[in-house]
Length: 170
Image (cartoon, rainbow, N blue to C red; front, side, top):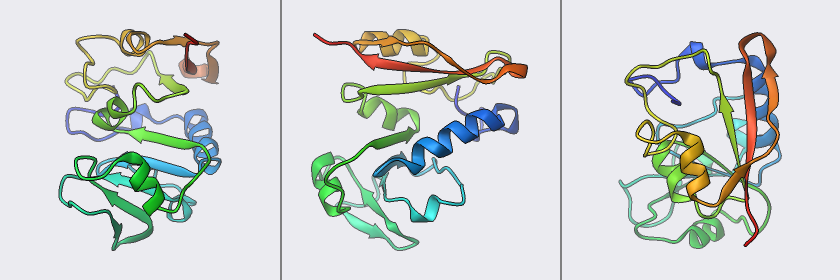
């Protein structure tokens, strides 16, 4: 789960090691992609170029509240068109969610970093992928040709890890 039943990430799912890992990864990204409910809310957030997925617009447009953000409706423009509009031609793209956004890119990921906090339960919460909880996140990633690498410990006191799931060569 990435949020509780109210679609909010509760404090019980926030860990300092995970936050630091996430922030450092985003600082190295050329572009961040997320839905309207996802936002990293970090000091560098306003500086980051981003695509915000929305069904409320047709044409690509600059977000009037965030000059570094492009509002993008994937039904009316391709990802490549959105990147060109945002003036991003190269570099790492960080997809930060939610579930529909993660699923849109499932067959494009080189690496998906899956953080897990095994002692936190969010009954009725929002799964990280559309098929969760019907399937586990591991099953979803494996079904898209990805395999887990060695997990990294982010918070030993709470057993919080992050595992790189990488696309397997054909």
